[in-house]
Length: 405
Image (cartoon, rainbow, N blue to C red):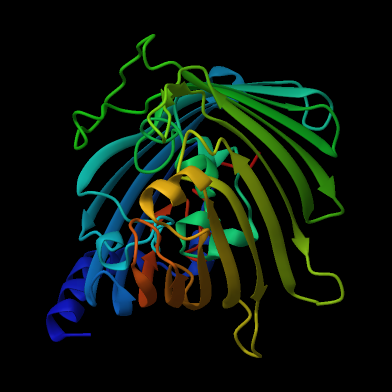
Protein backbone atom coordinates (compact mmCIF):
# COMPACT_ATOMS: atom_id res chain seq x y z
CA UNK A 1 0.00 0.00 0.00
CA UNK A 2 1.44 3.39 -0.94
CA UNK A 3 1.66 6.31 1.49
CA UNK A 4 -0.89 8.22 -0.60
CA UNK A 5 -3.44 5.39 -0.32
CA UNK A 6 -2.93 5.14 3.45
CA UNK A 7 -3.15 8.92 3.93
CA UNK A 8 -6.45 9.16 2.01
CA UNK A 9 -7.94 6.28 4.01
CA UNK A 10 -6.99 7.89 7.33
CA UNK A 11 -8.35 11.28 6.26
CA UNK A 12 -11.68 9.65 5.40
CA UNK A 13 -11.97 8.04 8.84
CA UNK A 14 -10.59 10.65 11.25
CA UNK A 15 -13.64 13.00 11.16
CA UNK A 16 -15.83 10.16 12.42
CA UNK A 17 -13.48 8.97 15.17
CA UNK A 18 -14.72 11.58 17.62
CA UNK A 19 -18.20 10.10 17.42
CA UNK A 20 -16.81 6.91 18.96
CA UNK A 21 -15.58 8.54 22.15
CA UNK A 22 -18.64 7.79 24.29
CA UNK A 23 -17.96 4.52 26.17
CA UNK A 24 -20.29 1.55 25.47
CA UNK A 25 -21.59 1.47 29.04
CA UNK A 26 -22.81 5.07 28.80
CA UNK A 27 -24.56 4.39 25.51
CA UNK A 28 -26.30 1.32 26.87
CA UNK A 29 -27.80 3.44 29.65
CA UNK A 30 -29.41 5.87 27.23
CA UNK A 31 -33.18 5.54 26.64
CA UNK A 32 -34.41 3.93 23.44
CA UNK A 33 -36.47 6.67 21.78
CA UNK A 34 -38.93 6.23 18.96
CA UNK A 35 -36.65 8.34 16.76
CA UNK A 36 -33.39 6.56 15.91
CA UNK A 37 -30.39 7.68 13.85
CA UNK A 38 -27.38 5.76 12.55
CA UNK A 39 -24.42 6.20 10.25
CA UNK A 40 -22.06 3.69 8.71
CA UNK A 41 -18.75 4.60 7.09
CA UNK A 42 -17.17 1.81 5.01
CA UNK A 43 -13.75 2.35 3.41
CA UNK A 44 -12.13 -0.32 1.23
CA UNK A 45 -8.59 -0.54 -0.12
CA UNK A 46 -8.08 -3.30 -2.71
CA UNK A 47 -5.22 -4.55 -4.84
CA UNK A 48 -5.65 -6.82 -7.82
CA UNK A 49 -2.42 -8.74 -7.29
CA UNK A 50 -2.42 -10.82 -10.43
CA UNK A 51 -4.58 -11.77 -13.40
CA UNK A 52 -7.80 -10.03 -14.28
CA UNK A 53 -7.60 -7.11 -16.67
CA UNK A 54 -5.03 -4.94 -14.87
CA UNK A 55 -2.92 -5.13 -11.71
CA UNK A 56 -3.18 -2.22 -9.29
CA UNK A 57 -4.81 -0.48 -6.33
CA UNK A 58 -8.44 0.60 -5.97
CA UNK A 59 -10.09 2.64 -3.21
CA UNK A 60 -13.83 2.53 -2.50
CA UNK A 61 -15.95 4.39 0.02
CA UNK A 62 -19.58 4.28 1.15
CA UNK A 63 -21.19 6.54 3.76
CA UNK A 64 -24.74 5.68 4.87
CA UNK A 65 -26.97 7.85 7.05
CA UNK A 66 -30.35 6.49 8.13
CA UNK A 67 -33.22 7.29 10.51
CA UNK A 68 -36.43 5.59 11.63
CA UNK A 69 -39.41 6.87 13.56
CA UNK A 70 -42.06 4.86 15.37
CA UNK A 71 -45.39 6.63 15.80
CA UNK A 72 -45.95 5.78 19.46
CA UNK A 73 -46.70 9.42 20.27
CA UNK A 74 -49.61 9.25 17.82
CA UNK A 75 -50.97 6.14 19.49
CA UNK A 76 -49.82 3.79 16.71
CA UNK A 77 -46.55 2.02 17.64
CA UNK A 78 -47.03 -0.30 14.65
CA UNK A 79 -46.47 2.58 12.20
CA UNK A 80 -42.85 3.14 11.19
CA UNK A 81 -41.23 5.61 8.81
CA UNK A 82 -37.69 5.04 7.57
CA UNK A 83 -35.20 6.81 5.35
CA UNK A 84 -31.61 6.25 4.22
CA UNK A 85 -29.16 8.33 2.18
CA UNK A 86 -25.74 7.17 1.04
CA UNK A 87 -22.68 8.59 -0.68
CA UNK A 88 -20.36 6.38 -2.72
CA UNK A 89 -17.08 7.24 -4.40
CA UNK A 90 -14.00 5.49 -5.70
CA UNK A 91 -12.63 3.72 -8.73
CA UNK A 92 -14.33 0.70 -10.29
CA UNK A 93 -12.62 -2.41 -8.96
CA UNK A 94 -14.50 -4.51 -11.50
CA UNK A 95 -12.62 -2.84 -14.34
CA UNK A 96 -9.40 -4.29 -12.90
CA UNK A 97 -10.70 -7.76 -12.02
CA UNK A 98 -13.00 -8.25 -15.01
CA UNK A 99 -15.56 -10.23 -13.01
CA UNK A 100 -19.36 -10.38 -13.16
CA UNK A 101 -20.06 -11.00 -9.48
CA UNK A 102 -18.24 -7.88 -8.13
CA UNK A 103 -15.55 -8.43 -5.50
CA UNK A 104 -16.64 -5.54 -3.26
CA UNK A 105 -20.29 -5.13 -2.26
CA UNK A 106 -19.89 -1.34 -1.87
CA UNK A 107 -18.70 -0.72 -5.43
CA UNK A 108 -20.81 1.86 -7.26
CA UNK A 109 -20.35 5.01 -9.33
CA UNK A 110 -19.69 8.20 -7.38
CA UNK A 111 -23.09 9.53 -6.37
CA UNK A 112 -25.26 10.72 -3.49
CA UNK A 113 -28.60 8.93 -3.43
CA UNK A 114 -31.84 8.68 -1.54
CA UNK A 115 -31.75 4.91 -1.10
CA UNK A 116 -34.79 4.19 1.06
CA UNK A 117 -37.88 6.21 2.01
CA UNK A 118 -40.80 4.10 3.17
CA UNK A 119 -43.65 3.83 5.64
CA UNK A 120 -44.75 0.54 7.20
CA UNK A 121 -47.97 -0.30 9.01
CA UNK A 122 -48.32 -3.45 11.07
CA UNK A 123 -51.52 -5.24 12.05
CA UNK A 124 -51.92 -7.97 14.65
CA UNK A 125 -49.48 -9.87 16.84
CA UNK A 126 -46.24 -11.44 15.62
CA UNK A 127 -46.55 -15.19 15.07
CA UNK A 128 -50.34 -15.02 15.25
CA UNK A 129 -51.33 -13.83 11.80
CA UNK A 130 -49.49 -10.47 11.90
CA UNK A 131 -49.41 -8.57 8.62
CA UNK A 132 -47.05 -5.68 7.79
CA UNK A 133 -47.42 -3.51 4.68
CA UNK A 134 -44.50 -1.36 3.49
CA UNK A 135 -44.66 1.24 0.70
CA UNK A 136 -42.19 3.71 -0.79
CA UNK A 137 -38.59 3.44 -2.02
CA UNK A 138 -37.61 -0.06 -0.82
CA UNK A 139 -34.42 -2.13 -0.97
CA UNK A 140 -35.63 -5.53 -2.20
CA UNK A 141 -32.62 -7.22 -0.60
CA UNK A 142 -33.64 -6.05 2.89
CA UNK A 143 -36.54 -8.52 2.82
CA UNK A 144 -35.78 -11.01 0.03
CA UNK A 145 -32.81 -13.31 -0.71
CA UNK A 146 -30.92 -12.18 2.41
CA UNK A 147 -28.82 -14.71 4.35
CA UNK A 148 -27.60 -13.79 7.85
CA UNK A 149 -24.23 -15.64 8.08
CA UNK A 150 -23.36 -14.57 4.52
CA UNK A 151 -23.45 -10.90 5.55
CA UNK A 152 -19.86 -11.21 6.87
CA UNK A 153 -18.46 -11.59 3.34
CA UNK A 154 -17.56 -8.84 0.88
CA UNK A 155 -18.20 -10.59 -2.45
CA UNK A 156 -21.47 -9.08 -3.71
CA UNK A 157 -22.96 -12.49 -4.52
CA UNK A 158 -23.23 -13.31 -0.81
CA UNK A 159 -25.45 -10.27 -0.31
CA UNK A 160 -27.82 -11.06 -3.18
CA UNK A 161 -27.04 -13.70 -5.77
CA UNK A 162 -26.36 -12.69 -9.40
CA UNK A 163 -29.17 -14.80 -10.88
CA UNK A 164 -31.45 -12.16 -9.34
CA UNK A 165 -29.17 -9.11 -9.09
CA UNK A 166 -28.28 -9.22 -12.81
CA UNK A 167 -31.91 -9.51 -13.93
CA UNK A 168 -34.13 -7.02 -15.74
CA UNK A 169 -33.19 -3.95 -17.74
CA UNK A 170 -31.52 -2.04 -14.88
CA UNK A 171 -31.31 -4.70 -12.21
CA UNK A 172 -33.89 -5.13 -9.44
CA UNK A 173 -34.48 -2.58 -6.67
CA UNK A 174 -31.19 -3.07 -4.78
CA UNK A 175 -27.96 -1.16 -4.05
CA UNK A 176 -27.11 1.22 -5.58
CA UNK A 177 -30.52 2.14 -7.12
CA UNK A 178 -33.93 1.39 -5.61
CA UNK A 179 -37.44 1.80 -6.96
CA UNK A 180 -40.97 2.45 -5.78
CA UNK A 181 -42.54 -0.68 -4.33
CA UNK A 182 -45.13 -2.22 -2.05
CA UNK A 183 -44.29 -5.27 0.09
CA UNK A 184 -46.35 -7.41 2.43
CA UNK A 185 -45.06 -9.68 5.21
CA UNK A 186 -47.35 -12.25 6.85
CA UNK A 187 -46.40 -14.35 9.89
CA UNK A 188 -49.24 -16.85 10.31
CA UNK A 189 -47.32 -18.82 12.97
CA UNK A 190 -44.06 -18.56 14.89
CA UNK A 191 -42.47 -20.93 12.38
CA UNK A 192 -43.66 -19.57 9.01
CA UNK A 193 -43.21 -16.19 7.32
CA UNK A 194 -44.50 -15.38 3.84
CA UNK A 195 -43.36 -12.26 1.94
CA UNK A 196 -44.47 -10.71 -1.30
CA UNK A 197 -43.46 -7.58 -3.20
CA UNK A 198 -44.30 -5.59 -6.30
CA UNK A 199 -41.48 -3.33 -7.56
CA UNK A 200 -41.10 -0.89 -10.44
CA UNK A 201 -39.50 -2.92 -13.22
CA UNK A 202 -36.75 -0.36 -13.98
CA UNK A 203 -35.25 1.25 -10.84
CA UNK A 204 -34.25 4.90 -11.10
CA UNK A 205 -33.63 6.55 -14.45
CA UNK A 206 -30.95 4.82 -16.57
CA UNK A 207 -30.44 8.11 -18.42
CA UNK A 208 -29.59 9.93 -15.14
CA UNK A 209 -27.30 7.52 -13.25
CA UNK A 210 -26.07 10.23 -10.83
CA UNK A 211 -29.52 11.51 -9.81
CA UNK A 212 -30.18 11.89 -6.07
CA UNK A 213 -33.67 10.43 -6.51
CA UNK A 214 -35.40 9.26 -9.65
CA UNK A 215 -38.82 7.60 -9.56
CA UNK A 216 -40.08 7.01 -13.07
CA UNK A 217 -43.31 5.02 -13.04
CA UNK A 218 -44.15 3.97 -16.57
CA UNK A 219 -46.27 1.23 -18.05
CA UNK A 220 -43.41 0.56 -20.45
CA UNK A 221 -41.10 -0.24 -17.53
CA UNK A 222 -43.45 -2.86 -16.16
CA UNK A 223 -43.07 -4.42 -12.73
CA UNK A 224 -41.11 -7.06 -10.87
CA UNK A 225 -43.06 -9.43 -8.63
CA UNK A 226 -41.35 -11.55 -5.99
CA UNK A 227 -42.49 -13.96 -3.28
CA UNK A 228 -40.56 -15.80 -0.57
CA UNK A 229 -41.60 -18.31 2.10
CA UNK A 230 -39.42 -18.82 5.19
CA UNK A 231 -39.60 -21.71 7.65
CA UNK A 232 -37.68 -21.62 10.92
CA UNK A 233 -35.45 -24.60 11.67
CA UNK A 234 -34.86 -24.59 15.40
CA UNK A 235 -33.65 -21.43 17.13
CA UNK A 236 -31.25 -20.07 14.49
CA UNK A 237 -31.92 -22.00 11.29
CA UNK A 238 -34.09 -21.12 8.30
CA UNK A 239 -35.22 -22.68 5.04
CA UNK A 240 -36.38 -20.25 2.33
CA UNK A 241 -37.82 -20.63 -1.15
CA UNK A 242 -38.49 -17.75 -3.54
CA UNK A 243 -39.65 -16.93 -7.07
CA UNK A 244 -39.58 -13.74 -9.14
CA UNK A 245 -40.81 -12.53 -12.53
CA UNK A 246 -40.91 -9.37 -14.64
CA UNK A 247 -44.06 -8.64 -16.61
CA UNK A 248 -42.21 -6.77 -19.38
CA UNK A 249 -39.75 -8.51 -21.64
CA UNK A 250 -36.06 -7.93 -22.30
CA UNK A 251 -34.25 -8.50 -25.60
CA UNK A 252 -33.19 -12.13 -25.95
CA UNK A 253 -29.44 -12.75 -25.72
CA UNK A 254 -29.38 -14.17 -29.23
CA UNK A 255 -31.29 -11.18 -30.63
CA UNK A 256 -34.30 -13.28 -31.55
CA UNK A 257 -37.27 -11.54 -30.05
CA UNK A 258 -38.08 -10.77 -26.42
CA UNK A 259 -37.85 -12.93 -23.29
CA UNK A 260 -39.74 -12.54 -20.00
CA UNK A 261 -37.08 -12.62 -17.27
CA UNK A 262 -37.93 -14.88 -14.32
CA UNK A 263 -36.32 -17.22 -11.82
CA UNK A 264 -36.47 -19.28 -8.65
CA UNK A 265 -34.10 -19.64 -5.69
CA UNK A 266 -33.76 -21.37 -2.35
CA UNK A 267 -31.39 -21.44 0.60
CA UNK A 268 -30.91 -23.03 3.99
CA UNK A 269 -28.93 -21.37 6.77
CA UNK A 270 -28.13 -22.13 10.40
CA UNK A 271 -25.63 -23.67 12.83
CA UNK A 272 -23.23 -26.26 11.41
CA UNK A 273 -24.14 -29.63 13.00
CA UNK A 274 -21.51 -30.85 15.43
CA UNK A 275 -19.38 -27.69 15.10
CA UNK A 276 -20.00 -25.34 18.02
CA UNK A 277 -19.76 -21.67 17.08
CA UNK A 278 -19.93 -22.25 13.32
CA UNK A 279 -22.84 -21.22 11.10
CA UNK A 280 -23.26 -21.73 7.40
CA UNK A 281 -25.54 -21.71 4.39
CA UNK A 282 -26.16 -23.19 0.96
CA UNK A 283 -28.03 -21.28 -1.77
CA UNK A 284 -28.99 -22.17 -5.33
CA UNK A 285 -30.97 -20.34 -7.99
CA UNK A 286 -31.92 -20.42 -11.65
CA UNK A 287 -32.96 -17.73 -14.16
CA UNK A 288 -34.03 -17.71 -17.81
CA UNK A 289 -30.88 -18.61 -19.84
CA UNK A 290 -32.28 -16.85 -22.89
CA UNK A 291 -32.79 -13.54 -21.09
CA UNK A 292 -29.61 -12.94 -19.08
CA UNK A 293 -25.94 -13.91 -18.92
CA UNK A 294 -26.10 -15.39 -15.39
CA UNK A 295 -28.55 -18.27 -15.75
CA UNK A 296 -27.84 -20.04 -12.47
CA UNK A 297 -26.04 -19.75 -9.17
CA UNK A 298 -24.60 -21.88 -6.39
CA UNK A 299 -23.14 -20.42 -3.21
CA UNK A 300 -22.06 -21.78 0.16
CA UNK A 301 -19.94 -20.79 3.12
CA UNK A 302 -19.25 -21.06 6.83
CA UNK A 303 -18.45 -18.42 9.44
CA UNK A 304 -17.44 -18.52 13.09
CA UNK A 305 -17.74 -15.91 15.83
CA UNK A 306 -15.00 -15.82 18.49
CA UNK A 307 -12.46 -18.02 16.66
CA UNK A 308 -9.71 -17.35 19.21
CA UNK A 309 -9.52 -17.11 23.00
CA UNK A 310 -9.74 -13.48 24.10
CA UNK A 311 -11.38 -12.40 20.82
CA UNK A 312 -15.09 -13.24 21.40
CA UNK A 313 -16.44 -10.72 18.87
CA UNK A 314 -14.08 -11.39 15.96
CA UNK A 315 -15.43 -13.42 13.04
CA UNK A 316 -13.74 -15.58 10.44
CA UNK A 317 -15.15 -17.31 7.39
CA UNK A 318 -14.65 -18.90 4.00
CA UNK A 319 -17.16 -18.93 1.16
CA UNK A 320 -17.65 -19.90 -2.47
CA UNK A 321 -19.85 -18.27 -5.11
CA UNK A 322 -20.42 -19.71 -8.57
CA UNK A 323 -22.25 -17.77 -11.27
CA UNK A 324 -23.34 -20.29 -13.92
CA UNK A 325 -23.44 -18.67 -17.35
CA UNK A 326 -26.09 -19.05 -20.01
CA UNK A 327 -25.21 -21.45 -22.85
CA UNK A 328 -26.25 -18.72 -25.28
CA UNK A 329 -23.85 -16.19 -23.70
CA UNK A 330 -21.07 -18.76 -23.67
CA UNK A 331 -21.55 -19.51 -27.35
CA UNK A 332 -21.85 -15.90 -28.49
CA UNK A 333 -19.21 -14.34 -26.22
CA UNK A 334 -16.70 -17.16 -25.84
CA UNK A 335 -17.13 -17.42 -22.06
CA UNK A 336 -16.47 -20.32 -19.70
CA UNK A 337 -19.27 -22.35 -18.12
CA UNK A 338 -19.05 -20.46 -14.82
CA UNK A 339 -17.29 -17.73 -12.88
CA UNK A 340 -16.26 -18.96 -9.42
CA UNK A 341 -14.97 -16.86 -6.52
CA UNK A 342 -13.41 -18.28 -3.36
CA UNK A 343 -13.24 -15.82 -0.45
CA UNK A 344 -11.54 -15.95 2.95
CA UNK A 345 -12.08 -13.14 5.44
CA UNK A 346 -11.40 -12.14 9.05
CA UNK A 347 -13.30 -9.36 10.85
CA UNK A 348 -11.30 -7.83 13.72
CA UNK A 349 -13.26 -5.80 16.28
CA UNK A 350 -11.14 -2.79 17.26
CA UNK A 351 -13.84 -1.21 19.45
CA UNK A 352 -17.60 -1.67 19.40
CA UNK A 353 -17.99 0.99 16.70
CA UNK A 354 -15.00 0.08 14.54
CA UNK A 355 -13.79 -3.03 12.72
CA UNK A 356 -10.94 -3.91 10.39
CA UNK A 357 -11.47 -6.75 7.93
CA UNK A 358 -8.69 -8.17 5.75
CA UNK A 359 -10.10 -10.12 2.81
CA UNK A 360 -8.72 -12.28 0.03
CA UNK A 361 -10.59 -13.50 -3.06
CA UNK A 362 -9.55 -15.72 -5.94
CA UNK A 363 -11.71 -15.31 -9.06
CA UNK A 364 -11.66 -18.26 -11.46
CA UNK A 365 -12.62 -17.40 -15.07
CA UNK A 366 -13.65 -13.73 -14.66
CA UNK A 367 -16.51 -13.46 -17.12
CA UNK A 368 -17.13 -9.85 -18.11
CA UNK A 369 -15.32 -10.77 -21.32
CA UNK A 370 -13.51 -13.67 -23.00
CA UNK A 371 -9.95 -14.71 -22.22
CA UNK A 372 -9.53 -12.91 -18.87
CA UNK A 373 -7.03 -14.66 -16.58
CA UNK A 374 -7.87 -15.84 -13.06
CA UNK A 375 -7.52 -12.96 -10.59
CA UNK A 376 -6.11 -12.81 -7.06
CA UNK A 377 -7.47 -9.84 -5.10
CA UNK A 378 -6.61 -8.73 -1.55
CA UNK A 379 -8.29 -5.99 0.45
CA UNK A 380 -8.77 -4.27 3.78
CA UNK A 381 -12.14 -2.92 4.94
CA UNK A 382 -12.59 -0.36 7.73
CA UNK A 383 -16.06 0.21 9.20
CA UNK A 384 -17.19 2.86 11.70
CA UNK A 385 -20.81 3.00 12.96
CA UNK A 386 -21.78 6.05 15.01
CA UNK A 387 -25.46 6.41 15.86
CA UNK A 388 -28.19 7.23 18.36
CA UNK A 389 -29.19 5.52 20.62
CA UNK A 390 -26.02 3.52 19.88
CA UNK A 391 -27.66 0.16 19.32
CA UNK A 392 -25.75 -0.92 16.25
CA UNK A 393 -22.25 -2.38 16.25
CA UNK A 394 -19.67 -2.29 13.46
CA UNK A 395 -19.76 -6.10 13.48
CA UNK A 396 -23.45 -6.01 12.48
CA UNK A 397 -24.16 -5.32 8.82
CA UNK A 398 -27.86 -4.59 9.37
CA UNK A 399 -29.25 -1.06 9.64
CA UNK A 400 -29.70 -0.60 13.43
CA UNK A 401 -32.53 1.90 12.93
CA UNK A 402 -34.76 -0.86 11.51
CA UNK A 403 -35.75 -3.63 13.94
CA UNK A 404 -35.58 -7.10 12.36
CA UNK A 405 -38.81 -8.61 11.07
